[in-house]
Amino acid sequence: MPYKHWLSCTISDMPYKHCNLAELDSFLITLNAAAAASFIQYPPSKIELHEEKDELVAVPPQGQDDDRGINEDIKKLYRTALSNEWLTYDWDPDKISKYLTNSISENDNNALHIAAAADSHMVVRKLVKYTTKEDLAIQNGDGYTAFCLLAGSPWVGLAALMFDKNEKLPSIRGYDEMLPIHVAAQHGHKNMVKYLYEVSKDELTEKDRIELIRNLISRADLFALQLLKEHKELAIANLGYEWRRETALHILAGTPMMPPNLANQNQQGILKRYFNISVSDSDKLPAHEKLSPQTLELLHLLLKNVDYGDTWIDEVINVAVAQDNIELLSMIICHYPELICKVDGDTDTCGRIFCNAVWKRQKDIFKLLKKNVRPRFQRKLLQKVHQYKDDEGNNILHYAGMSPPSDKLDTISGVAFQLQQELLWFQVN
Image (cartoon, rainbow, N blue to C red):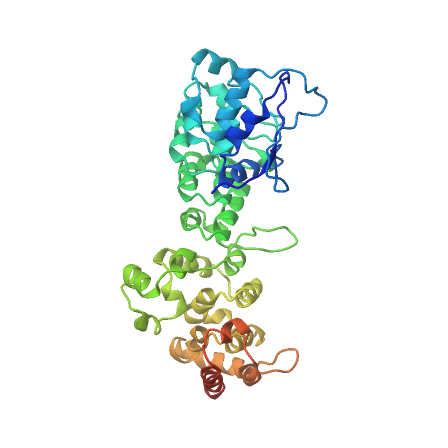
């Protein structure tokens, strides 16, 4: 369902006269929110959306008089590029060749820039036929080529069509030194990222790879696994600033492990289809073993590169605790307990994990102490948990007696059942 927006657009580099706003209404009102949003994601855009009015108004650029006429051919090309109405446009080769490279917006966008940013894929396909290698390398006011703008869409076939004409396109940088592959990663288009990596990986610098892995990890994109296999140094590389260490694990600790499309579906059907286990069987599994094999491989690859003497892993664990990243914590407890059970370390990290689990009633974490921890670490973990006290002197029994967050308690219907569950938690502890 299209949103009603007041769209103010500026068109420069042409005379301006007798603009029929009714004509603008007729095609712009059909634009859906996705196309409009796609166009304005590349800063700083010259198309502004306003929700204050239900009308569409064209605002001429400053310094130009309203009574100067607009070239009709360029107007039609602009409208076609923005609206993807390719069937209604007269694709006259002479007109296309004449106006294709013209700047038709205030930010020096030509028709191909506008079509690529507005996701007008059919118009892009048509326009590319008339372009030369040099035409495709033209950058708008922000430094983006049409290829770079197209990278923010899922149209891999169109990207390949452009690449066949100009193989330098993946290495032309846009705003803030961004490459097309960074744009694709930011928009979460996995197939586009995979394609662009194959055609440009030899041109990527260390800084480019760091920016790419940051974007992939923060969106839980499993293409990060391939990149880390080829560049193992990225597993513990600092992806943040010089004054603040931030590794892939830092980012992953604050990222949901279970994809929303799996978490929100019927659990019995999902577990049976992907892992060949039933819901009753899944209750016996540690939380991390319910993840996909690729996600597990990614976690192992990152965790096995951690030096046990590194203090920054405590920061990662604290982030995972704060964000309730049960799957990552489960993986560490079961397979890398030495990271939270250091001989010379304090008890804070280990105690914080399990006291938080008791308070938030996270049975998937608490049950690991008795069932899944390697025997030689089990006693050490239990000892550290029992010794732990927070800044206010609360131990694990105090946390068991605290009222859990309302969102945890409300999942149990009925006050009597809630009280029964609370008593069980205290007895277990």
